[in-house]
Amino acid sequence: MKPLWDVIGKRWLGYVFSVLLIIPGVVALVTNSMADRGALNWGVDFTGGNYFHFKLERVASIGQIREMVDRFATGQSIIQAAEQDVFIRTRPLTAQEKAAFMSALRQEFGGVTVLREDEVGPTIGRELRNTAIIGLIIGLLLQLIYVSVRFKSVRYAVTMDLALLHDLLIVVGVFAITRTEVNSSFVAVLLTVVGYSINDKIVLFDRIRENLAMRTREVFERLVNRSLLESLVRSINTSVTVILAIAAVYFFGGVTVRDLAFGLTVGVAISAYSSVFNAGALLVDWDLWSDRRSGRNRTAEVSVLPTGPAMPSPVGPSEARSSGTSRSPAGSGRRRRRSRRR
Image (cartoon, rainbow, N blue to C red):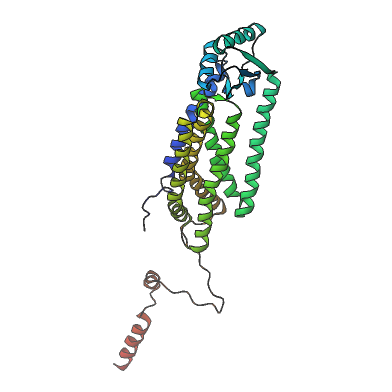
């Protein structure tokens, strides 16, 4: 019976669309690097800069503070406010820029008390960036080990990691295209996308494993397609629910969490896409490649015969016609007996 939606049969469309999503991000990373702007728009968490903790005479909103900071042109900045306490992180400032910045702040908000002032060098920012990359790699390796043990096959883990790299490449590419600031929350975005994507794909792989135990005669491509369709509604419902919650944070959570919500929205949407169109397809292609290597026939059904005495194999109609073993010997004997009577 032909499936209602043959995702696996048309899996090449998913591969093509994935390539079309990845290429613009890679081009943006390369062109940004060639233009000496940096492949990504690294924030002060990674490049270093100045950190200020002020206490204002009157309460000011984050919007008012950000408007003043942006007007002062201190570049990408991170601003947090709790009543009269304000925390600002900026790019590295010279002594003259720092003095002008403090003067503009006092003119805008009156009395300003400096509670803390620190300067983070680019070396610390570089160490933070390297630590984040190492942590991400360790996370991928740990899930590779876990999935290999859980599903008793390394192919599930490798195909899942390939789908995860697809998701992360697209998220990084979107940040490169939009020049969204990459700060410490970007690391949280990547780790959250990894966790969500793993969970979504494990649901699909677990359904494949269950169907493998129940449908031993079904061709693997059809079984994967069946498993995908059975888990599709769950995947869509979960992803839509999460995206709606993140959208509320994006529109109503303020400027400070908008980049975080933006990255999570892209990551969750891409994870849902790769779970449907990439993870199962990669597993099927791996299985086909393995079969070609071992010389097995994918269309043959394998059944286990009961032990006992060997039974003669039935002779098909075409074999009977070609061997001439039907009734020709008996007919020739009767003709010989009739000729002797005469």
